Image 1: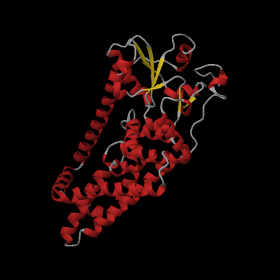
Image 2: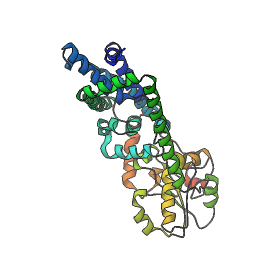
Image 3: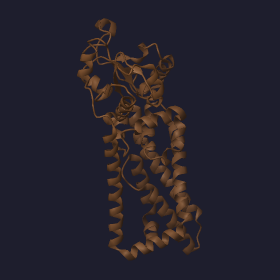
Length: 361
């Protein structure tokens, strides 16, 4: 069966299922599918002397329907479960160690408008959709922006297929003559891509600071003098979603390393935590500071989540007076957030505990 015959019979279902599967995070080739479908529709229109407009618009509508329906699943997950959904979706990303933090910063700068271009940036779409739900974006606004973004993305794919229909027809005719050899070539290319991403990930991990400190070790340090300096390098948006910190932590931005180097003593003990899987951001910052002359800088294994799970108390962000802008944002989020924010692990206030850095629950 020729490619355009296959598209003629099953094209609408192929487009809908592929785009929805990609929106759900499945490893399906949505953009290549749109390009192939666009080329096939163009070829069929030329051979049948029919119109191209309506078939393309029909495929575009199906792509938008599939994309928005798939995205709604993660959007509702973000609304209901907040940052837990973000952690789940991050595990599905090929660049999972840093995808959430980058997307949080994109969203913090552009808001829901980031959905207009999210489909064009690998990893951004998969995280920005549940983040929109977690940040309390209205359903109507989400559907409007997400639908426009999916439509723009799908239109580009279908348009490329129409523009290069003749070249793609020649390519697929050649592949059909190769038979099984063509399948082997595709399999080899796919394996090479997966191997390349695995190698990049391993190379990244090997360059990072390997020393770690556990939450129990940190707690023991906080009972003695001098107290360690604790850096919370989570994004501003992440702190809005989870407005608690390890008691005594100060906010730091790994993009402002020069400022940090000037403000802190290279001889002091520094503990860094983030919200990235494998503590990638914290490990990278620790290694950079050590290379700059800081003698004792280590990431915290598991970050704030591990601190909570160990039963240690966390400090509500609104109790901190050094970031009034952040406090206002937390207050706004409390009024609009559709899911309950995390509560502190310990009962009672820090003052009642009689310990400036908290205590076990």
